[in-house]
Length: 246
Length: 246
Image (cartoon, rainbow over all chains, first blue to last red; front, side, top):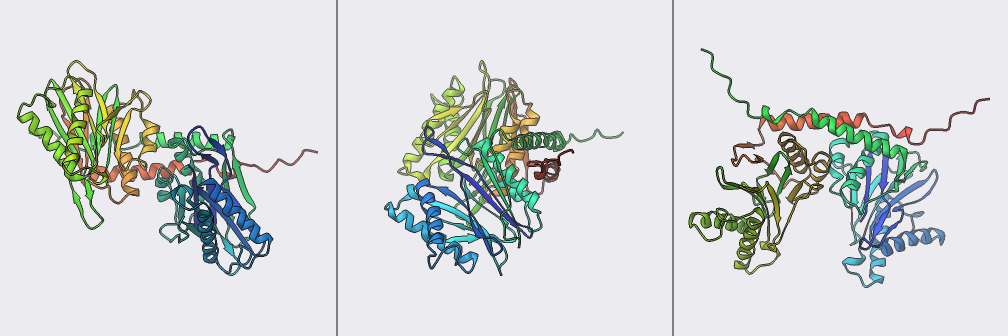
């Protein structure tokens, strides 16, 4: 399984992914699911992948080849982020067709970034090649095991969230997912993209021994317990009627 | 969709369920999913249901009929909670077979309670009629839309959790689920069962206008934001190396 999340706000984009892949519980490996492409100052792309590992590797590899070969359509040539998502969708379908298709070979992707002249965008590319983007009310996209980590995203993120806060939120979302699903695991990759910077310079990689990730988990756990301890007691839900005054 | 959760600890059992059923977004109704049976002082059962409404209503109705008709096997006669789960599993399969079976007619149940001479128990009964119970490490069971509300259960519950705390935890778990899945909704039913009491006397029903539920949601939301604001800043993850002393 996999968990990847990407957020968008006025400040820019945040990408976060785990690194565990498995084909059954006895075939667990570590593979990064975050891939980057771009031309500094002109265009930057981050791609997150989930699903069949052969398909995702094939697609990511083809994106690199197309750039290298100066193909007519590549991440170096697409005129908009929406075209980039179309291109990724076509590669995704083509790669699945090589295997004869079928559910087993499906993959989904998130592609985000910015092309000079446009604002930053995020797209989720389905196995069928079609895609959706974010809205002001839904400023994030998830692929893989998305449910455990969704509540915190719904509570924290909006269009005005700072990059730092969005990154913390993505890490907390990842932490909740890792706690509840064994097949999502470190190292955790985190990429921040500041709007209009056209460089991908703020990257972190946290392995399971990371002192920061440990501190974050510990503090979040303590904070949740504290928040929980302050909830109104159930006895206040239906207080016994006060004794009548004589 | 549905969300039901039941918890077990030394102190007793807690049951919590939503009341929304839907067959498509234009056919949404309100049905309680919590059903109670028992003989005060001798045995008490709470049943939570998820899945096809015709199946769950058929099963619950049959449990009542079997008691009324003094059938050889009913919740009045089973010798253990595990037998009660077997019995519920048989009714579940029989009800599904009436419709010819198939995924559409499936239902799952949680049954919990206590029979004099035994400690309290919880069972989850699958559509196939088989069942699982809790363990010291997994002191809860969920049916329906279970993922959104799971992380808080994993963080809070253990064998020593008080009934009051377990009930709050179930409500918070329900709140997270309702936030993320529109097809789970109020009224919320909550039943506490104190171990060895053999009465079901502590019951709450919260509709969407409930002042307590609103206060709980508001306080939890504020507490989460507060906990989030206290997380170690990302900048502490990879501090710039300190300038060398001369």
